[in-house]
Length: 204
Image (cartoon, rainbow, N blue to C red; front, top):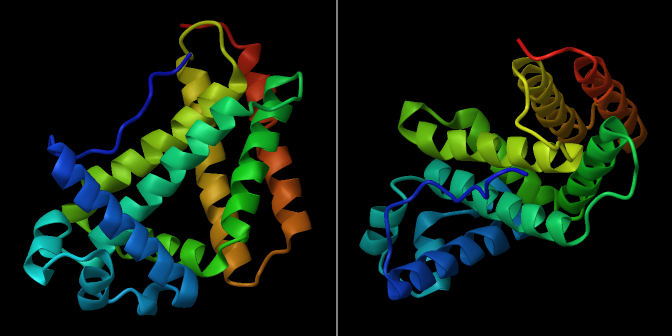
């Protein structure tokens, strides 16, 4: 079992958390309509009912905001996948099934997916804590799907990192029109075979 991953953030009051949720929902709505360029901070503030200065106190830039939006989307995916876990028996197949379900969820909102991925690409060191949280959430989703009975070995964690990189790369190539869904599925299933290889490797 993996520990639940919470987005990296300061402790907020109930009212502040509700305001933050409104901001993230407004960001996701605007991105769903027109992608990265449609998310303008002034419009996000207007749509979420907060002052522009307040918005910038929560999220210093559009990149911060969209990376946080991706955190929120992944958190929701993780909760959904825990309620409806993969049905395959083998760990590699379970992870592949899980990642394809997550991919199809993003596929339903291509403009939003593109905006979030572009924000990750543009993120500099100031956004590192938020980017690290996105990575931890993706790792947690993969580890949950593996269904390990004990803590993962170093080799398994290395395999998870490669799978995570491949999943993100597949998302980028699909968004840019350079890969079909069928090719993405093949790539995901292929890289997930690393899980079978590391399962036979004893812990050091």
